[in-house]
Amino acid sequence: MAIMIRLQSHATVILLMIVSCSAIPLAQHDHRLDLIPINISVPPVVLVPGIGGSIMSDVSSGVRVWIRLYEADTYFERFMWGKFNASSMKLEPFPGQPLVAPVLSGYGLDGIRNLDPSVRWPIYDYVAYFDAMIQELESQGWIHGISLFGVPWDWRQSMCWTPTLDRLEDALRAARERNNGRKVALVSHSMGALVVKCFMARRPEFFQEAVETWISIAAPHQGASAKIFMEFLQGYNLGNIVIGAEAAKVLSLEAPAVYELLPQENFEWQEQPYIALQWKNGTRQVYGETGGTTG
Image 1: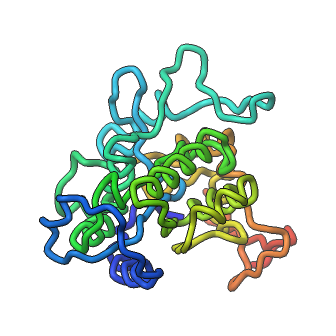
Image 2 (image 1 turned 180 degrees about the vertical axis):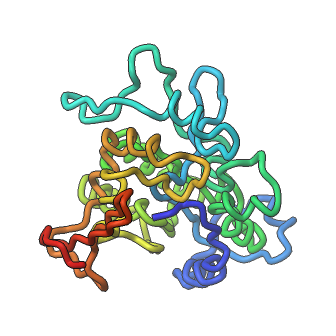
């Protein structure tokens, strides 16, 4: 579940999978391709991040509110909390609370490559999300806004939230239009795969028309692990060590995306989940899936 990982270990493998797509030459040559050290004909690529994997900013001021390693709790509580509206089926801000939205600049890539651009090494590896993969693709001939796009989304909302699906469709459409109709290689990470699956279900004709290859990394196709239950019970900060569990829990209880990560009823566990309670008097109780005490 933790999104603060660097996808560097996957970058070369993903590159090989993308290049293995049919080698159809680009119909229109862009002069910027002449500056690329390795000039190859590349399929357009669209990157879809997972939960917590998009930078969120205050709409009015542009201030980055997620993710922040400094004053994280303050910004998280002020900007990211909200209340689920059963009528609109989305998380909405409290009265008077600022509106936030994903960062869409750089053809969507700025919002997913480095989740806190203010930090430097050694903390950089903690927030450098798609950065290594994007750099690898750039070095091999992919160009922002021509053959490489990102799809940041409000990861608090449902994976099937219409603005998210619209943004994915826009990116796929732009990628095809700028490559003479060539189909797209779609790369998703974690819950981004569930966004893609919802897109496939809601807009199957367009998906079939636009996507040649879909590469899914660490996807929770059967739901996520027991950490989801931990979110509801005591809070889970998505791997962000500077956000308290209690602050995370407030959002978890209201965010549709968290509920959509609950495991399927017939989830095939490698190890059965359990909940361990440590009481102040030193007593420890462990509860299994059936609710009984196991130790």
